[in-house]
Every structure is written in structure tokens, then in C-alpha cells.
Length: 232
Image 1: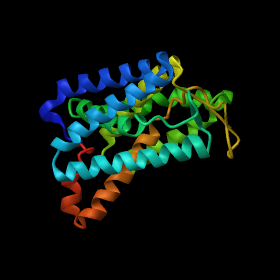
Image 2: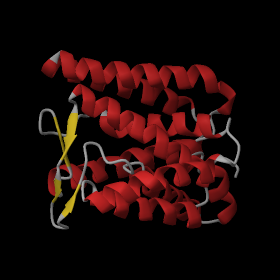
Image 3: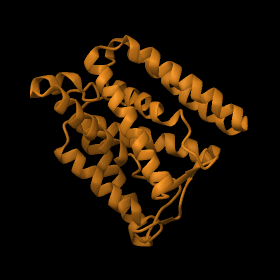
Image 4: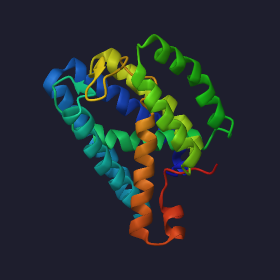
């Protein structure tokens, strides 16, 4: 989303809300999650209300796809499990907030990030594959590269790869969720968290873009409405 007009303060707010919400969720047990739910949704709805109509469409689509993805990946597939074995209500809007943060950061970085991140991650992905410690990462890394090659926002995808990893490390260290060591159905292995978990955010962006384009019915509308896409 193109939030450049309010970048620094908005980015700092997102970081504070996400980090603080995860601490509350972990430390205050049930009521902490309730407070986090209310706080994240309040912030999301406040910014949604003030956004342009096309941005509102993108934000809403992001939350819907994120919710469906969480249900499938966690409750159906069993890739990871949250502390209370549920899907916390703050998670879907939290994904949209994290995308806002990624876009703010991507707008301030140059195109070198688009190749620096994949190159920096490659040796670690190879090590996880060779040792067998995290074969899921190889699959996710290929998915990430495909999004980088064929998606419209490689700079954003590279940033989300790093931002998502930081959030995953923070959340798993606190104990808010944990990834399964063995991947159901595929017979793969995973570390906690996977290095390339950010690939899921790239797919989420592609889904949102496709939805905005379909609703808008014209390529011009689609390009202008998807605020998750900074200039290359």
C-alpha cells in the first residue's frame, strides 16, 4: 500500500502495535489476546476508514485472503499452531499492517534489495536442504523466486521476505506460535520458523492484485488501486 505520505510515524506505530500485541498475547494469557485483538483491529479499521476506495478494496482483500490462508495453513494443513490452538483475531489485520510496513520500507530502499535478499538467503537455504533440517525452505524459496521473477513488485517482495522473517523469529521466541518440525502431507522438514516463510506474503500480494484487477475490470484501475506495489 502506498502510505508514503505518513511513512515514518505509521511505520513506527505498526511496529509498536505488532510487537506489543504479541507480548500481551503471550504474557496475559486469554485476556492479553483479547486486548491485542481489539488494538490491532481498531488501528486497522481507523486507517481503512481514512483510505481511498481503491485502497480499501486492497486492504479488505488482504484481510480476507489472510484469514483463509491462516485457516488452511494452521488448522487444516498443520504447518504451525498458535498458543491457544486457534487463529487469533488480530492475525488477519496484522498481515495487512505488516504489508503497510513493508511498503513504507520498500519505498525508501533502492532496487539493489531485489537481488541482495535472494542472494543472501541462498546459502542458508542450501545448507538447510543439504542437512535436511529444513527442506520446506527450499520449496518456499523457489516460490519466492517465482514471485520475484513474475510478480509486479520485486522490491516489496524482498522487503517482505526480511520483515516476515523478523516477525516470525520474534513471535516464535515469545511462544505465540510454533512451526511443526515435520510438514504434513509432503514429508518435508521445517525449522521454527522457516527462513523463507516470507514467500507466503508474496503469494498474498499476488492474490490481492488479482482481486483488485478483477474488480476494477481495467488494467489502469488495477495498477493504481493496488497500493501494495511500490515502483520498481
